Image (tube, one colour):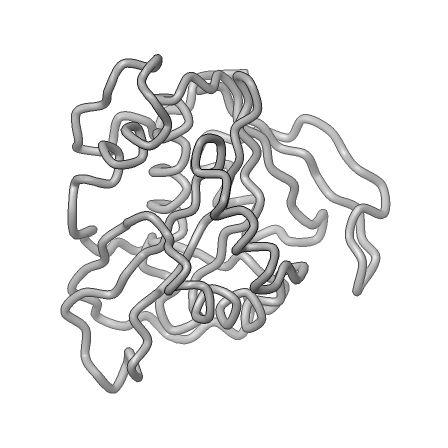
Length: 212
């Protein structure tokens, strides 16, 4: 697979790949607020219902904590992802040595748009040996079309690279063309197909990968 062309856009100076995952995550997320950008960012089966773009002053990407889980589960449910639920996310939090769990927190936003919600999106990935698997990524409907999902994905890929991962993988519904387009823009390429991988509804998954 080709090297991800979007890596390097993270402004922070990255640590040596042999440093712990915790340090890699802290360094990769140190760049602070994220300027909004344009682009399709629909990750669930409900993509066509995404709201019109809004003017957003910025986001910051940080590590997820137990206090974030209620909002994370809410975003998961609203996005139509295969459900994990609070218990599964909480269990993942207990493995900080090989799990990357990041949130995008809203900063400087109109209160009417934010409606009291502090988390705009999240991403979950796990590293096994020199491979990273991206499990879940989702963004609140009102914060899509600002490049936030791509930024979350780029950040988690950079975390993986700094922690020593050489390849990243993910699955996506075969019919979810918008998500596939996003992943292609972030350097992923189709690597296989998993028959009847998803349920509710049953659908094949495309396996996509990128070299880090």
